[in-house]
Image 1 (cartoon, rainbow, N blue to C red):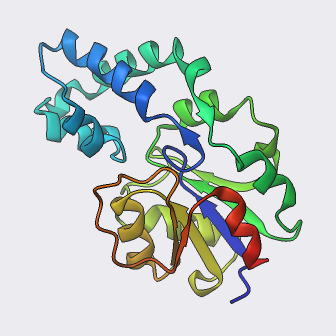
Image 2 (cartoon, rainbow, N blue to C red; image 1 turned 60 degrees about the vertical axis):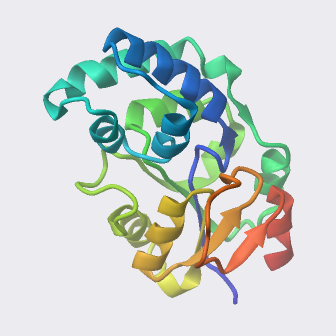
Image 3 (cartoon, helix red, strand yellow; image 1 turned 90 degrees about the vertical axis):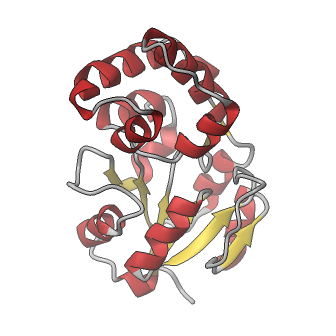
Length: 207
């Protein structure tokens, strides 16, 4: 298969952000007098904010306040989030004619603030955040919207992610899925993967 587009999730795929996510969510949930366990962190990590709030028992009407608090606390921790080893090398060596993009459940402000330091972002032909479509992963709409914007058919694209939500998104969009083993939940039972990549630079074998 010769792919024309390569789409990436962010959290757990490009960046090792779960430890910081857990710290930030624990602080925010303390303000709501809600517990936040390691299991909660694992479950809500790939979710959009609205989904995480529902799981944690926070009213949808609190969304604006919850999101504002999350972004404010996270802003103090961005410097603690690192790319996974090999991501920079991967981005530098992918074919120049390959359409690259991001499809994430992060809000637009979070995406831009967190990824701004990385020079490879200039190569991204499209970035789709939770603010850009009315539905979130695992609905296929975010991924299909990204592919539409770069004019690539689903059959010619590969989506790289670490979570079951990412896998389900790819399946619903009829897009091949590459599992980022380096960031995946070790307890997840992935069933519909086209490829399993142990490290980011393994993707280069496809091109």
